[in-house]
Amino acid sequence: MTDTKASKLTWALEEIAALRDENERLKNDAAIFYEAAAGLLATNDALRAQLAEAQDALQAAKDLNIVEAK
Image (cartoon, rainbow, N blue to C red):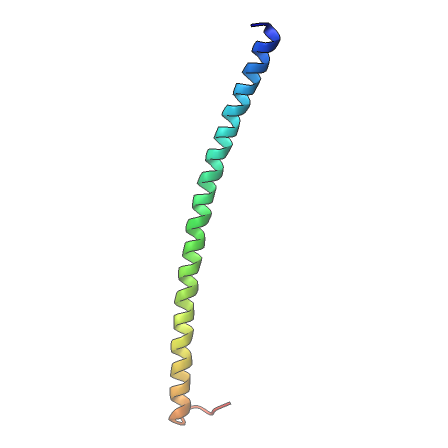
């Protein structure tokens, strides 16, 4: 193998290694974002449930004339 071919092969192998490293970093980042998104969805669900409870309590208060209906 000539020096030119060997250097091109070395360069290509280094590029492949760098791409594999970048791919691994991206997969790790994706996993972190996935976990964060799952946490946000859970928080959203909890907040919706709290809102529904508050709306029910407000309606019950209105029904009992505790608060003025608007």
